[in-house]
Each structure stands twice: as structure tokens, then as C-alpha cells.
Image (cartoon, rainbow, N blue to C red; front, side):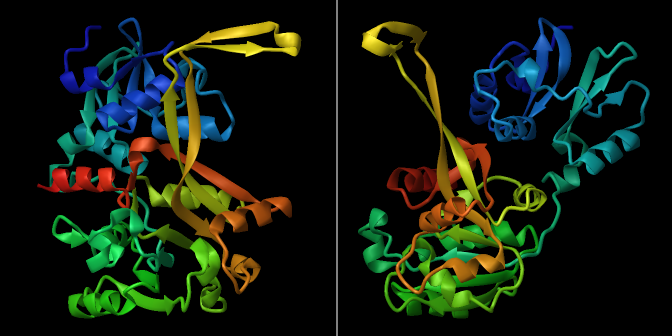
Length: 355
């Protein structure tokens, strides 16, 4: 079958392509799913969830898509009513639904925004857990702006950085915010007092001195009794927060860090040598993939007992738990689903998008 629809063409990939190629294509096309073909024959749909599960199983990103393709995905078939197709998409929270004939040939694809015009945003589960936002730093990377504004209050369009973060959580029915403040603390408090947004239930806890990226969390001991998110005040994650929480809970992690997959292409052939400098292998222009700490975490409240009353980074906490044989999970996301708003280049890109 010759696919003529431009949206389908842009999101199509060959079954023998690599997982890393699929991830790159998702980033380029700003999508979380691709349609997989062998020649012109439809073979299935590949989602970001499929890739994340492969990464969690330590499957090499150079493996072919065919090795991780989910053959049990639910599709629609010719003759099914639009109402049935819509119901399937709602139940699965599916961004797209392929329509197959009796021989599993692709006939058409319905996209969420085509069938749900009145609610074009894909639905997700609500989670309603507390959120801690670490907003006590000086924001030196954004100087000289932060000489005047505290970093959380730097504008992004019609809202501030911290409101952009909070609104993402509010969309998951998370309204209980604990904000760590130090630098220009009164400015931050006065801003939210003036704003009076009923969606935000804010509690402040103040560092009297810099305590690292986790030290001030100890101030919340005995104040939190449920699983909670911790977010830096300058990052935005375009990922399903309910899925991250589900991963954390199903794996019985005490701490989960969200990590962005960052790929670097080496423009040269690389050589691996063994003993006495003897050649073992040559790889032409390899891709190197790293998992980068995004600054978004999920923690269990018992973890607060592990934080000393001293300067302490969250990486120190992760190392401590790991050394004790406790569960620290890493949830992978695409590099384009992580925005570091505290970086000048990324901040300027965001401003350009808003204009």
C-alpha cells in the first residue's frame, strides 16, 4: 500500500531501522509514536513507551525495531463504527488508531485531534501527590536577569518559569506545593500572595544557608507522609507524570530519577584495541548515548530520614541508597522532552516560541 497522508509519511519508519533511529525521528517530528513498515506493508505501531521499556530491559539502542515491536497492540478494523474506534482510543489513551482490513493491511489511521476536536489534548490519569520545588538557588546561569528577579519568577510568555512547572503538575491534579526558598525569598512569597491562584496550595520552607540540592528536604521531615515529586525550579518535562509514578511504584523504588537520553554522533571511525595494542574492532561513526539527570525525581517519605542536617546533594542521596543496596530507579525520556529553562540558550528558544 502506498501511504499518501503526509502526517503518516512523516511518522513512518522501517522495521529494520535501529531503536536510536526511531528515537531521533520522534524528536525531529515531535511525536511519541511511529508507524512501522516493511517495504509498504504495515507491521505495527512503535510508541515511546515501547522504547522506554526496552531501555529499562537494557536492550542496546542499536538493536533493530523489529526486536521490540509489540505484536499485541490493539487496532481498529474496517467496519467498526466511529464511536467504537473513539471508545478504544479513550480506553487506551491512544494518540492514533490504525484501521486494518481482514488481512491486517493498513487502510487508514485516525488521529486523536481528528476525532476529538472539542478536547484535542490526550487525556491522562490524575495522581494528586505533593510536589516539592527547589527554588532557593541564585540562578547564576541566567545572570544578569537573576540579579533583579529570582530565577523562579523569570517570565516565559505570560507566566513565570515556576508557574509553568506548577501548571504541568496541576494538569495531573497535583495542587499541594512545597517551595524551598532562600535567595530573594520575600519576592517569591509576595508574588504568589499577589497572584492568589486557587489552583496552588503553597507551603514554603526556607534555607537559612545553602544546603545543596537535597539538604533542605530534611526540613520537611514529619510533614510528608506520601510519595512525592521533587523538581528543580528551572526544568520542564514533557512526559506523562502518571507513567513515571507508575514505574516508581511498580518497581518498589525508594527514589526514581528522570533521565533524558542524550545522543552524540562521533564523526570518525573509532578503534578498539586489546593487549599490546592489537586491533580488536573498528566501528564507523558510532552513536554514544548517555542518560542525563533532568532534575525531576520521585521520593518516598521515609527517605527524608536519610538526609543529614548539612549540605547534601540529591546525587549524594542516590549514592548512599545504592551503596546500601536500596532501590534507585532511572526513568528514561527523550532528550527533546526535557527543557532546561535555566540555560540561556534554552531560555531564549522558549522566548522565541512564545513570541
